[in-house]
Length: 238
Image (cartoon, rainbow, N blue to C red; front, side, top):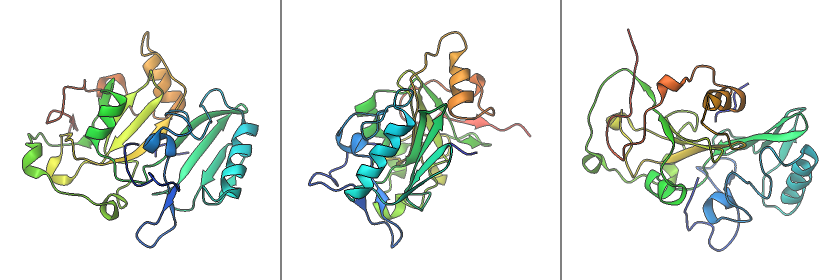
């Protein structure tokens, strides 16, 4: 079960929450991330991880679908999925009758600088697992990336910015020329919303294991945030 899979755009300034993407299915855009409506992350469309019930989830999705604000969704015993394409969909996970986790792709052009300006610096970074050491000059490698390009990124790959005490994780796509770096222009491609969790007394590992289902990530994998640039690397031992 893969639960891996945010936001300052002007795309939605005049309303509407779905945009086309490279001829594929419409991409849902998180209004909360893009505009702070109707609530701020990790709340999503009025639903809050750890608080909202499954009945509230279904009622909200039915209302949004009926009004044309989201594409069709389907449900299983533990999962509500919005949209058909994993690159533009949203997944809502249920545990014990309550909303446990929301994950999905960022459906509009959002970069790392915009994210951090809004959400503040992350509590930890889990770098993309790369086997080389590198330095980078972000300005030298800056390439303009349009929505048609970010849509091709896998929201599950890249470096992750962790905000456990806010209940949020965001994935940053790392271009090959910038391995080991996090630069302001890099695109935010995925998000995860969970209940908030304190990082004290081993609770960080509980948060990762229980909500993110990632027993492969350990506290030793964390790299402290030290600003944009190089030094965000997990060295893979031969």
